[in-house]
Image 1 (cartoon, rainbow, N blue to C red):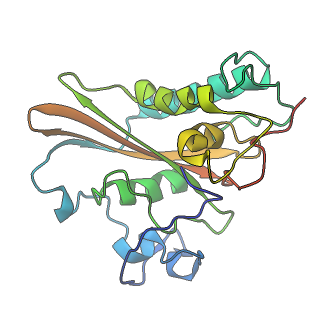
Image 2: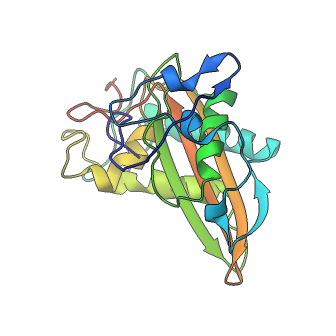
Image 3: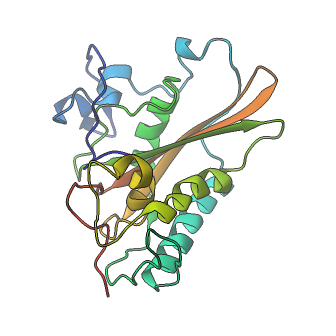
Length: 226
């Protein structure tokens, strides 16, 4: 969750790396160095992950389908005016809600960042040559591994605090920013990275999803009322 695809945390150092002919060190963001430029192409868990028993890196093919289908199910629920929650609810129907498709480049960038084990921290720059990129992060743990849909529903549930008439402000963003990125009408593509790991006898699931084009611009509404 970010404002207009921008982040505000400090990261250091840059080296040259490229992927599929893209030199990520030439992609500029107002907030800093691109994740792939800084950390390279590898999605192997970094030394920051020491102490965690990594069970798997990246979503499975089935999880990728679930991520896309759950996003589109919820986006269409909102677009059709069927979301009754809000502050106040219900949410108005939307006229410009694209269905999302999976994007491997977004997923790769998300996985590079997820594998740094900088938990619940946004990277400074993840844009592509096509567009600025937004981001949502979720984490849950328990005696059983939380599934990917349960993590996405954490973002969906923020709708209960969203006032469509107010839109996105500095005051409400922390409570509703994951939701608004999920239902940003002009966003078209999604790609996610993940880690599943054991720590302190708990099974943990960490999910990072990148969205393009980014949403969450202050003063704007996430979609157009029908």
